Length: 148
Image 1 (cartoon, helix red, strand yellow):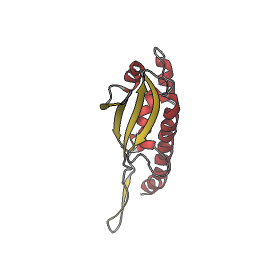
Image 2 (cartoon, rainbow, N blue to C red):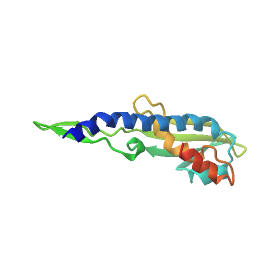
Image 3 (spheres, rainbow, N blue to C red):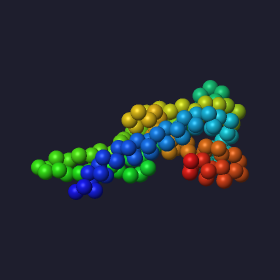
Image 4 (tube, rainbow, N blue to C red):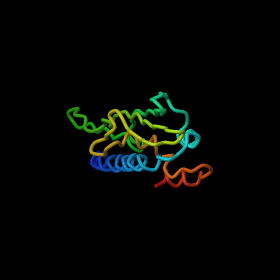
């Protein structure tokens, strides 16, 4: 029982730390993706879920529904007489929108329910993290960015 109480007390701290890391990735993505070409984006982020022509530019969209940060759901603790504590996983949704002009990213925007707690745009971090520090042929920089 004591172990469950400790886990229930520590879970919000662990999950908050993971959400903060995701929020940092999202913030860094706003700047570091600018300038990447379409081929590089396809290599680090995969194929977009949708594309739209917008005048002389093109917008690619990537979507993600939130799972608990770090993939760890908070534990549920049942206390007598049947009171459940914890167990509610953070949820959210992010659409990353990349604007391309002449084949290069010029703008990165996030839309949807992107925050987890106070961690702004945390839901979006998982989408952009593999592109942080990416350069054509620079696969080691992708690995470094995803482990930071």
